[in-house]
Length: 94
Image 1 (tube, rainbow, N blue to C red):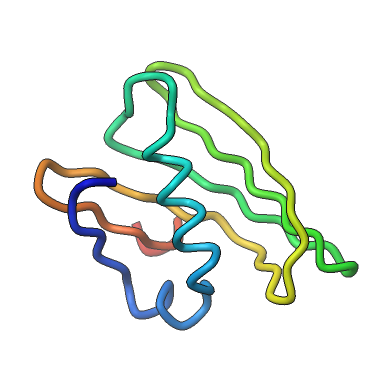
Image 2 (image 1 turned 90 degrees about the vertical axis):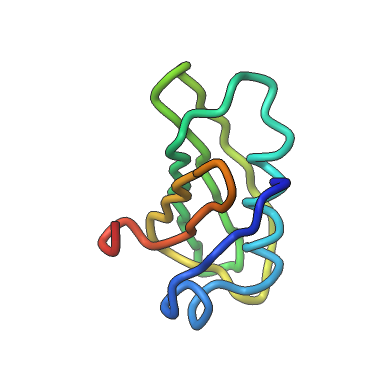
């Protein structure tokens, strides 16, 4: 994203830089118009496989990505996009 991304303390503590950069890149590379709210559902397997489902409501968009990592995470992360900045937070912080 071209604007500044603010993160909550919990995101900073629980999400690796790899996850953070990957989710921002997914938003940047979207092939449809971006909605103001991006949702990422993260699912971790015991074998280190990370699944990330990226979605938005309008226009409808959903893609699923998988990769191996030493720090898999479970949770739902929202990115609220404003004109000058975006905020990344867990869904229960929204």
